[in-house]
Structure formats: structure tokens, C-alpha cells
Length: 293
Image (cartoon, rainbow, N blue to C red; front, side, top):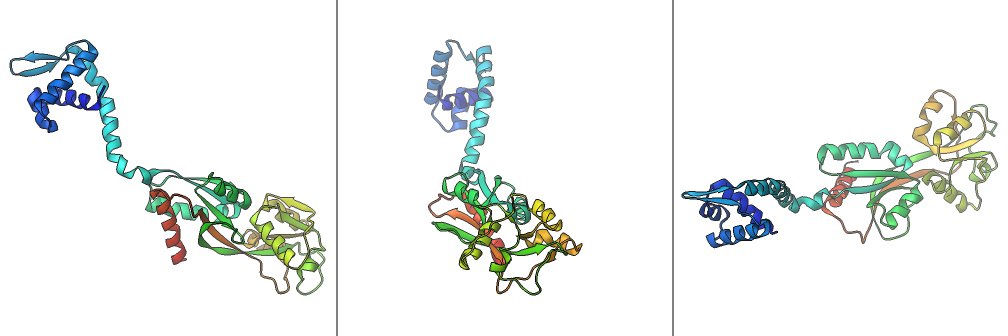
């Protein structure tokens, strides 16, 4: 069955004549006759009563038209949407935990207000897992924190955040700033390997030729905060997470000598990635956000 035949069937029913259907669809009258003949051959029944002044649907014709209406409506809807299909392709985003906690919700909220047609799904993982998803095609874009990874990436800067070493107020430390070599001699409460915060800290230690052997590793920053508050060791975490505990006097800052702990944040896309119109809109929005920051 040809879709055009169903359109002709509908036009005949609407105009009441073969001639009217031909005019409505800008086709020849012989094309209308041919379509009706083909449909009646397929159904094995007459679809129209031939009247002195036009035609009318037979019960079989009415039944076929009822079945065709849903098909014709769906096809016309698709025809309207075809030029914009690529703009509606969902975007799959992988985000590190810290960015998903503090930055991404605001970004997505702003996108929803400006471009409600974009469909964005988010998967929150460790920074290294996010990079793996980006490289194997499991994500269209990844929100990454830390040192810019090696590879062919388009990177959009998203700012930075500070890391802070903290301990309980009564945790025994010498007066004055600590070097990194001195810091690692104390019990350390650290995020798990593969997290952006841990990777940054480990890289800083590698520069001075030492490594961290934590007494407590956790994927949960708040568990580390509680452990530090109880005097179990020194935690190195995102400064924003520590503000309440610092303000309440449950933790105190540890000064480090000639060290600034900071993580930069990026949105990453593989340079060879085909950019759909929806992904282009998403990246353009992030670039605009970066310029106004």
C-alpha cells in the first residue's frame, strides 16, 4: 500500500468527487482513478458509491479511512518535525561528583529555562569513569575536574575550586605551615583513587617525591568530614564542603607551605565527535556561560 493512495482516499472523502480530490492534491484526475483502482483491488471491495453528482464512501471505504487517519496524522507530524529532528536528539552527559553537586544543577536549570527543547540525561561517576565513558562513546560530553587529561578533546573551562586540608581543633600539629612531606606523616583521610580530589593531591605529592598512604579512603566526602571532626586524621577535601564545620569550630584549617591546592573544571567533548544540533546548542551555551563568568 502506498501512502499517497491513502491521502487520495482522504481527499476524495473530503471533497466528495474525484475531480475535487485531484485539485486539492494538485495531481491529475487519472492519478486519482488509478489510486482508487489499486486500493479497491487490494481490499477486494468497492470503496465508493458512484453517485450522479460525486461519490460517497462505502462501509469498507469508511473502515479503511478510519484506519488510515492515524497513519496520515503520524506521517504529517513527522514531516513537520523532520527539519528539527537533530535538534531533539538527547544529550548524554557524564559528570564528576563534585561538579554534579555544586555546578551542574545551576547550568542545567539555566539551560532548561532558555532551551526547554533540549533533553539532557546525567550520569554521575568518578572523574576517571566519566573520562572512560566519554572515550568509549557512553557519553556525549563529560564534566571533568583536575588537570586537563591527555587526548583529543574540545575543552570548555568552567572555573575552579579550592581544596583544603583540615583536622579537628585538638588534633596535635606543630605551629606554622606544613610541607607536603610533613603532611603525609600524619593519618590521612582521603577520597578514593580515581576521584578528582585524590588525583590532584596524589599528583602534588608525586612532584615532591612522596605518596599518600591513607588510614581512611571513602567515596563519601561527608564520611571523611565526620572522621576528621572526631580527630581521626587530616582530611583533604573541597573547601565548600567544609564551610559549616569550620564555622562551627568542629574543624580547623591546616596551612601548607608554598602549596595552593586547586582543581580546574572543564566540559569535554572528543574532537572527532559528530556534533548534533542539540549538542552544538549545549556546547554553545557552556561557552557563553564561561565568557560571562
